[in-house]
Image (tube, rainbow, N blue to C red; front, top):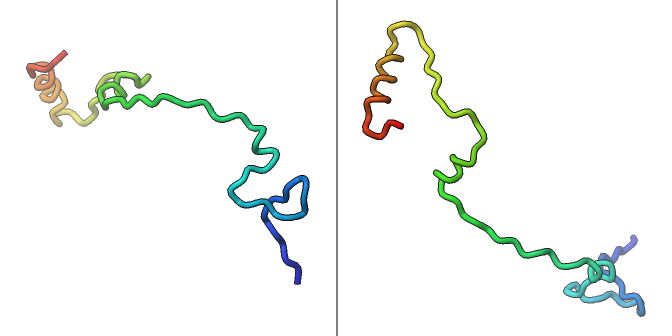
Length: 79
């Protein structure tokens, strides 16, 4: 039965280095840059979408498509 030690070895000794120390190749990696995070509202996220804006109503004649568009454009918030 073989025992495998996963602990990193130090370069100048045969003893395993503690788990909280960096390996030699890890110490040469530069630290990651700090990022700024901006939290956007739902309205801001929707404005940034690059999708077609509009509404497509489908249905058979007499199902209320025109009625809905009349309601839409007669509302006080209509653009």
